[in-house]
Image 1 (cartoon, rainbow, N blue to C red):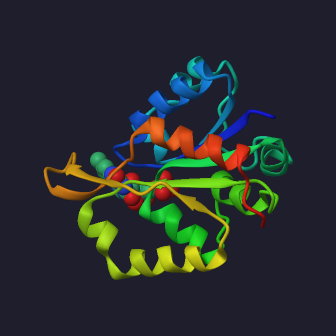
Image 2 (image 1 turned 30 degrees about the vertical axis):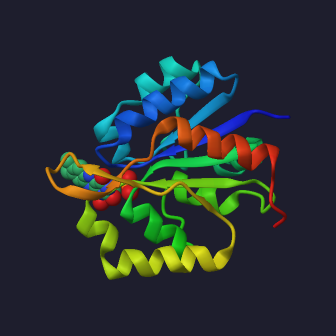
Length: 182
Ligand SMILES: Cc1cc2nc3c(=O)[nH]c(=O)nc-3n(C[C@H](O)[C@H](O)[C@H](O)COP(=O)(O)O)c2cc1C
């Protein structure tokens, strides 16, 4: 089994947990390549992920001519954790305005993709976000690891916290070892 994990990290407070996920995945034997959105890099710097993975971190669509295609083809599974409301909306609409969104669209249909959203409770239950979730479900393309309910960084208690990183890695592993036909 190839163990190439492409991790997309978006701009949310839970971006720091993506470092824990990266560390866990590397220790479990995965080779991890990280794409940070520009806003994710405001929360956690590329150097942290580079140190954890021992590989360059990708942030820019135009860093090399075919980064999005090479990364998409390289991955045996893609994981987006945390997935922001913004990137969730882009996925629902098929938008590709940065390296992460472009690479996700370029993923081969046979490559599993795991989505782990995290956001404020009101954002999560916003009708537009819920509609975007339904649109993504209709594609029958993505595996969700749902956010959990707890006290959030904003002080609210409710749904929106990033799932446990061990559960996210378990979902990625299951997606590779027990693939569903697409
Ligand atoms: C301190 C702070 C925390 C944030 N946390 C979240 C979050 O958990 N989830 C989310 O969807 N957006 C969050 N946002 C808003 C996003 O950063 C914003 O929507 C941004 O445009 C997302 O960019 P990206 O999706 O391209 O990474 C937060 C913003 C700030 C300033």
